[in-house]
Length: 247
Image (cartoon, rainbow, N blue to C red; front, side, top):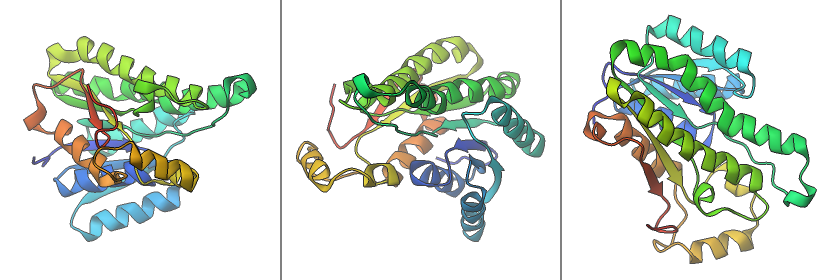
């Protein structure tokens, strides 16, 4: 799965799944533009990638801020001349039952998890259309497929990403651009670390493979969908959940 000569942009790259995706894409030969709010963590990631022979550059960006999205991606395009692969990974949670959920928490999650993907796609799609090649990979969630009590905003945003994936796949297929989603289950990240131990133990019992996944499990799926080997796959949701949800 060589990605030599490709340029990838990963949002939410400072930690967790995004961090692992950036490292994996670089290992497969892609030059990686890493984007997130925490510039210090991004610079540490760039150094890690460089230490293993890869190429990366950081771009500070709050994906919930349209002006920052446009500015950062414009800078990345100016730096590298193109963006071949877009990984829309940035995401947050603001959990609460709907009856108690503040409008601001609904808006923040939808803006960060869903609207940011639309904005980022708009900024990179011209480059992909021009060269008639591209890979857009949206990081959804098993809860976008099953729902989850107390996470109506998060589940709605992740379900929205699946709809966006399928609509975009139809829009750009004729230009040799594929659009797919990866839907992780329970993955060891700072987001899941905040869950109670009882919740995590019960979750593992419901996973046929009997373990929580690692960010690298998701990153491997992303690299596959970004490769030539996945050129006939589009509009697909690839589950990386240990069998938690099948079918």
